[in-house]
Amino acid sequence: MLVIIHNILAPYRVPLFNKLAQSLDGQLAVVLSRDTHRKRRRWSVPWPDVSFHVELLHTVGIARGERVFDVSFGVRRVLDRLSPDVVVLGGWDLSASWSSLLWCRLNVVPAIAWVESGVGTGSFRGRLSSLARQRFLDGCEAALVSGDAAAAFVNQLHSGLPTTVVRNAIGLSALHALPAPTARSALFVGELSQRKGVDVLLEALPGLLQQLESITIVGDGQLRPAVEAATQRLERVHYLGYLEGQHLVDVFASADIVVAPSRKDPAPLVASEALTAGRPLVLGPGVGNANDLHRLSPEAVSVMATASPSELIGGVTKVLGHLVTPVARAAFTASSCAEALLRGTRMGMPAETLIQQSGFERHRSPA
Image (cartoon, rainbow, N blue to C red; front, side, top):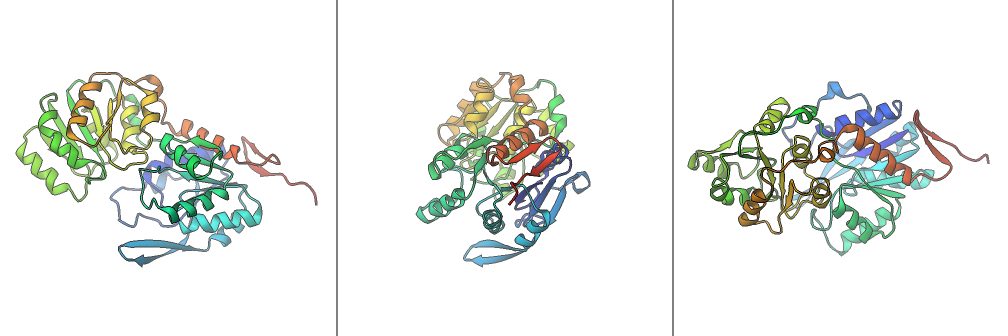
């Protein structure tokens, strides 16, 4: 039995976890701190499509200043009942992950950290937070990481801990079949915030429109009024609000290039979706898995040196018209990502514990 501790069930995780459950003959359980995001994100979780076991913990939010910390209860009881052979801890900021880590130590069960953030792509980067993260990783046998930045962060905190890159599996399978674009247009999809570099995009609009026929912005957030004002000022800039599902596939189909000028972003899902759709990509300096994405398709992926309008315009000029490699288009399937995750859990398994195609089985020596 493989157990994954997670904060919420994001829609894009469902295909990955479904594939894991299939590969493990149903021996997968996902334990959630909450049934939805604290900020009530607008995405829709396709619960009817979920084919793996889900456990929901009782979680209470405790406010400390402007930040709210979730404290989950019942972790030990759930793990005792599930009796996992290996536990993947999805985030060192979850109380459920720390409780699960303690349970793993007491029950001699391998714990695998799942780390997506890097030194420059997350919050709370100080001495105390580093010591806490070091202690967390000291109790883990391996780590699953989103890319080079996360791997470097893990190595900085715990040198020599085995790491395996697990990419974002996309949920929009229709993106694989999209034909090559025919219009010179750019697309931004994501939270409308400074963290995502939307202010940089807005400042770069006049320069981008000298190269492009149109620019489409999809998403919601605090910078929405500024985006709406730009669409009123510039007739070739279009704002479509929040989209998902087939509507999102349609906007990818009409785009020639995707921009993600993020300042802090461990592994933006839109980057995986863009490459799967065969769309060239410009990434901001704060994208943690940028080097991994660039290696997949060097000519079609450009990484900005700074979060500036000139860098964004230059990145678009550099990759516009280039083709995404077949390797990159096939890199984010549920099957390939599930295979990487299982490979990463094997790295932390002791010799006496074997992973078989039909599931996890624990083999202990007789007393």
